[in-house]
Each structure stands twice: as structure tokens, then as C-alpha cells.
Image (cartoon, rainbow, N blue to C red):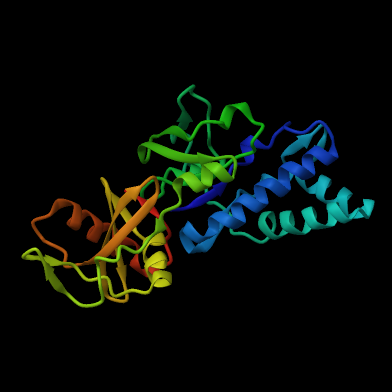
Length: 266
């Protein structure tokens, strides 16, 4: 999935510079942790993020500059983290560039030039990271409507618990061993990946309906939810008469040259 820092959620959210720094550092920490499940292990931002007014008439860039002059230890820690995320990550692209192109949310707010402009073009559901205090972006998803790409659900998180709720976590099921065997007359599928590699495969998988499919080192693996967001998995052969398998294969082919592509919610 592509991950975006939601610059619209920052505007006017702080009452002073201390509050602004807290918002920026919290956003930056969340974006940094989310990168493991993101496309190219990155979080994208608009070119306008630094110019958004976060408190009074001070922009994000002005708050960061001001924090460097105060000489406080907490300012320096927060500033370094915020700069690392907000100034070193790739930019979003504007897809709705023609006057007749439209992109709006469910209350008909124009989203041209925002992070949602790029999010609309994503394969599967993208993810926005929003400021926790912004009432407009407290929900776990945002529905957007694009004249180019149609309706899309954009996942949204504002804190660690929100991120934890969408992370896929691998847990080894001891019944799946490195060699095939039979139990009670049935063949038990192989899991020949180490826990670390299995987690990497899962974190770069494609979720189709209730299953996650991942191609890892030339082999396909299927993961199913055991409890909450805990997944067990095993090696499979794709079946051409299985629509879910073929959908995963089609998406994989469209993304394979772009790995790591993170968690894909098809």
C-alpha cells in the first residue's frame, strides 16, 4: 500500500508551538513505524505540507525553524524526527490536473492537490496518517470519489492502536513443518520459511477477501487470520481455477517490479 501523511489534518490543530511540535513528532513517529508495510518502505507527502499553517500564522516549516532556536532538548529530538520524515520523504503526484478532473470526499470537499489526489490512483486501499486532534480525520477510513479512478476507500490511522489494528503479524503454526507429511490421512502443507522471512512475506502480501497471498523468492504462500490480526501461513501452488489466486497473481504482476510494495488490501 502507499502511505501518505495527511497534510489537511495538520491545519490549525495546535494552540501554540509546543503543541505544534507534539503533533509533528507524533505524526513523524507513526509514519516511521508504518513504513515497513508501505510501498517502497516510504511515507509520501505533498509539496505543500511544509507551508500548512499548524498554529496561528505559523507554518510547519516555521515551527520547525523556531524550535531549533529555543535550544530545548525535547525540541531537538522532536525536530530531528519531524525533519527526517517531512523533509526527506518522496512527494506525492497530482493526478487530477485538468479542469474537468474532479476528486472529492463524501461531503463534496475538493481534494485536488492534496495527498488524496495521489491516493486515488493507488492499487488497493492506500493509508493516510492523520493528526490525532483533527475531528475531520478521526475515522478509520475516508471515502473519496475520483472522476479518473472512481470510488476508493482510504484507510486512516491517528495513533499506535490504529496502526496495530491493520498490521499483519505472523505466528508460526507448528503443524506446518519444513517437509510435507500426512496426518489423519490428509496432506499437511509445508511452511519452509523462517519466522523472520514469513513475516517479511506477509508484510508484502496481497489480501484478497479473507486470505493474504505472497510471492517470496519465487514461491507462493497463503496466510489466513488466526485471531485478530495474527496470521498463520503455508506454501501453496496457485490454482488457475481459483479466482482469488488469479486476482492475487494479476496484482502481483502489476507490482512485482516495484517491490517492496507492502500490505496490499485488494
